[in-house]
Image 1 (tube, one colour):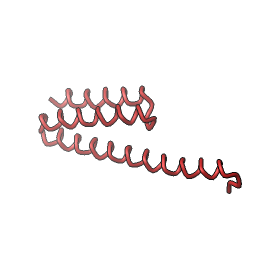
Image 2 (cartoon, helix red, strand yellow):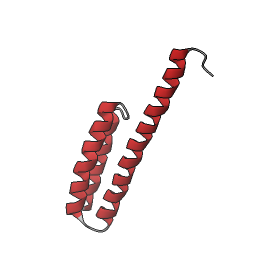
Image 3 (cartoon, helix red, strand yellow):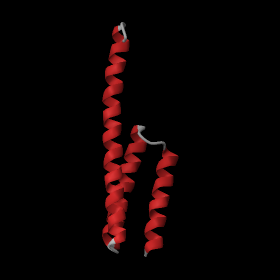
Image 4 (tube, helix red, strand yellow):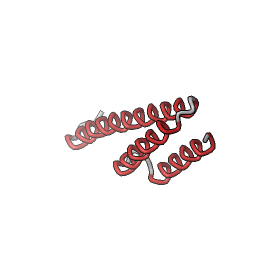
Length: 87
């Protein structure tokens, strides 16, 4: 356990940031599952709308430092490829 005041503050900040990152990642995963269901149901219009939403959320997560920018680019590329292959 930390004894120094600044170290205690850093622990508090880390816990807050971890919770925020976990929430962002969970939300993105939920949208990806919705996208997969839309593709399975041959609902491509909904899938395209979901892809734009996911793309926006991933870019924001990359800007906040939750994901690396190349990881985001790879995820978006794979999801787009998935939609195009299903069409």
